[in-house]
Length: 108
Length: 117
Image 1 (cartoon, rainbow over the protein chains, first blue to last red):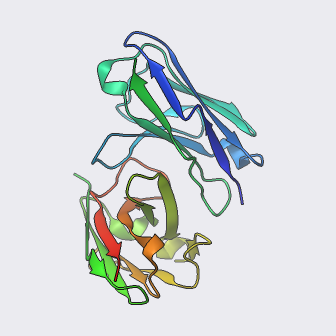
Image 2 (tube, rainbow over the protein chains, first blue to last red):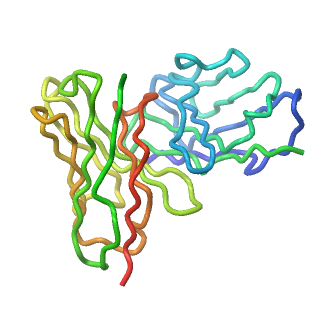
């Protein structure tokens, strides 16, 4: 069973800054089957990135994903006010298809 | 427009059963894997399980925490996926979401299941 560990747990930044969120896997994620979601309070998660680096439809290009194997990164190049939320990674390379525990991106 | 609507949540006692429904519209339901994800109050996301399309064998996979207690099924004629939850525990309290495919942009709004005596 693959365990995903996200870091940091909380990230405090200001609008306009660059955000770097990490997701580490306890075993190699098959075929880079790694997704990133954004979730705001009371809402369902929103898919941002799939296959480690492919942006989902309608996602702004300030969001980018990278990585392979056991180390993955979500980068938000220039934070907008609406980007402050909780972010989750999920691996779907091998069952059970686990999520990370989340990174809360908060306004500094 | 793709829509997923969960229903069937509510308050249930430990040890009892509950069945959730996910009613889909706006796409060819039978062609897709349907998944369930849950989120305990104030906690992160937890994958629960999925059922593949009949064309892909209709097979199911489950999280370790629910295997043997939960069962996913589908009725393609009604465009509905089900999550049958048996032997419920207090730790099963969560908002339950259905999603199209294992990973994708389409999620329902969620339905709250509270397991408490």
